Image 1 (cartoon, one colour):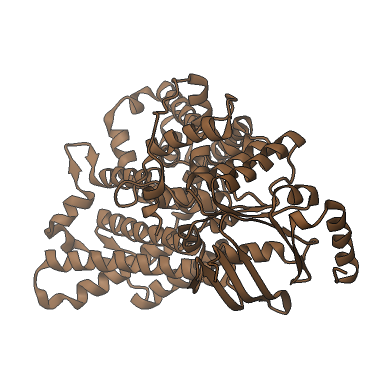
Image 2 (cartoon, helix red, strand yellow):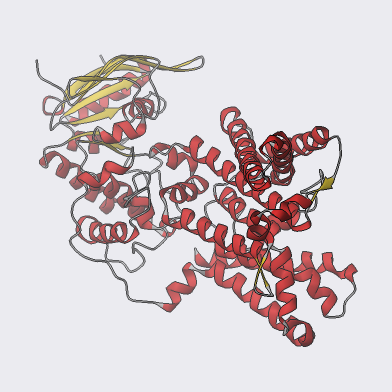
Length: 346
Length: 252
């Protein structure tokens, strides 16, 4: 409905190419540059305090192994927050996606081909994620209930449903190792580069393209900025918001698959412990809870700061007891920095 | 029978218990500027939002160029050639100028991908040619929230202009504008008339309305209280009638 507008738009008469202006560049990208500054500063601190650890490739390989499981969900979550919504139910979607995966694998046993079975199970998991995301969005849009409230409810609902459906059982997924999906999702390229990192990069790039180069992303920013204006200008705000929750659903189910493949084991409590790290990545990255602003790159960097702190705390010689304290410190200081940068940018 | 650009027949709108509009008959001719007058809460904005497809009427019919339109929505209304400068301006203040100009009607290449360069080019052209913005603070990539009231209104107007509307609806466009900016706006409305298009103009300022409108429709308590050709009624007489309507609900 929006595309044929090109027809009555007059022809372009001149090209607009503003001269490059460093100050403007800094101002328009202040949030991303800010978090990049935090990232580099911390990195230098780590290298200076524990050069042996931080100048060797192993530690980076470790970061790239563990961080993607939550970082990948932080990407669509960023889009949700930019649209001025909130989703706290994604950890339960990880679990429900895997429950669906298990059911499908079991139900297709007659095929006698692990690869096809696993493929169908993956599809089922992703579809389950999309359905749960759709349901979140549907309840939020149709009943007009704030998403924070709805997704607290659905988080309990689906994590509970996962436990009920498998009766609390946990079991091995050793069979996935016979299929190429194991190497495709959690294998390694060379000695150090884990495949889950590759998938994180893919999702990050897709997220960036959707948010910045596509009409969908333009509408997400507008809805988060001023939903009333968006409606007056004919944007179907309900549909866009439902789609945003579906994105989180699909990607969370995928993250659940990655995390379970990595350990080749299914835990019905999958998802526990991911909530705060993922949310912290989004806010650390400079996305405003007030909606309308935020970047994918910021979230990406934020996730790696979160992912590095735990290992770094120990590597620089502090006890593990310091981890949460340092998390908190960095998050609070970064959020203050972002608010300051935003005020100055206005 | 003359074919109107736009015609409403027996349109009513209620929000729950509240009857906002009752049995409204309204038409807008070709190349006509109609002023809507009425006190706060008379139903002017509701009427506008029905015309632009934001609200659906509870009952009644809407015709465009003689053809009946069912289930009018905002995208449908924009396709039919209605552009609106809303009282609340309908801007997204954290976003850049080019995103605001193309809000809800982004220029795309294929599969919904944005044609960003073209939107920035167009925005730049509109700014210099139509808006006369030369200030350095106003560039296609600057954020709209920083603009002055007049500049924001300029953005809302230029947005209506770009898409070659047949009907331009202006809801309280001079609100919060300086005298100079208001004069510029009145010129703009006269420009719509000269370009052979139609407009609906709502303003608190009777002087402005009397100045630019061919015809004035007075709305009171959700009903059409009366209408006048501006060439047949003096400004003072119109003002007296407006006061009388507000007090007694009747024009005479």
